[in-house]
Amino acid sequence: MFRRNHTNIPIPHVHMYSVSHDNMIGFPYIIMDYVHGSTAFDQSMALGDPMCVPEEYQAHFFAQVARIMVELASIRFGCVGSVFQLDQTAGRVDQGLYSKFGVGPFADTNTGNYMRHQHFYADYPVTLAAKLNIDNPKHSDLEPVGSGIARALKQQRFAQVEPESADFPLVNLELGTHNILVDASYTILSVIDWDSTFALPAAASYMFPFCSGAEPGVPGATVEVSPICPPLNDKRLRACNAFARAYAEAAMAQSQSPPQRLLKGVPFEYLVAYRFRHGVLSGHAFWSKEALAFRCLLFLRAKQDWVDEAWVPGLQWLLDHSDEDVREAYVVT
Image 1 (spheres, rainbow, N blue to C red):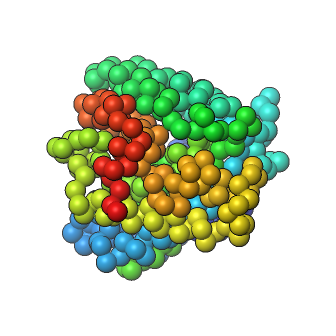
Image 2: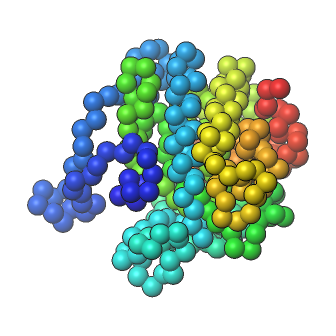
């Protein structure tokens, strides 16, 4: 309801739902509008490669996804966490922009909300890894991944420039081709599965859509560790930079304010451009160490069993290189 009321993003209307077994049918359910289309993932699979939108459709698809991400990120809250209706978060202070919604804890860790980037970066990755270890004791120890993410994120550039009263964009961490319904020409009809939408540090909004062909891989990796996260090659690098440019164009198009008005409260894209020294508008924000470390956090949340083996050295690679080195490794000039 929140996304439908505050954005123009195409989202099916939900008529009824239940998240428990305590209902007339005895199971969780959802009843929503029917959308006549296929997921972009299934469409790509039918065309030969489920992990990549065909190149002839990428520009069209990327432009639409970028507009969705920019519009969603223009909704900002005063702390990091899950967005809830206020009557579901009794006792919590409303830090949001809208009177009926507030920010509460993350369901997977029961931690938060967090008032600063540093608090979230220091606590959430480590807590998440510890919880996943408990939930799945047969899995390899994920503590090195969680602590590695925390260390990499602590190097984030916002530490020097983030205002005391920071605000945090709304980000859908599950925005991938498996949750985007399209027609035969990859025109987006609807976006589904919004339960991983949170108020997060801005670097989280610089995420390439999963299984779209724009996949940066594990930093520094030269071998494939998973089909979901293959090593970077020229084709994927071109797709990544094409998406970064599409995002920059969407950010420019959305804003009607002149770029010299770089103060708190102006449209999202210019505030972010200022913090990244105009990195969004050049596409470089996607190649910050912070954004790449955050992508590891996404794979950790998704419980990918290869994360520990691949990302521990990948996170160390980020720690060992400067932001400039990272950009040089990724950006096509």
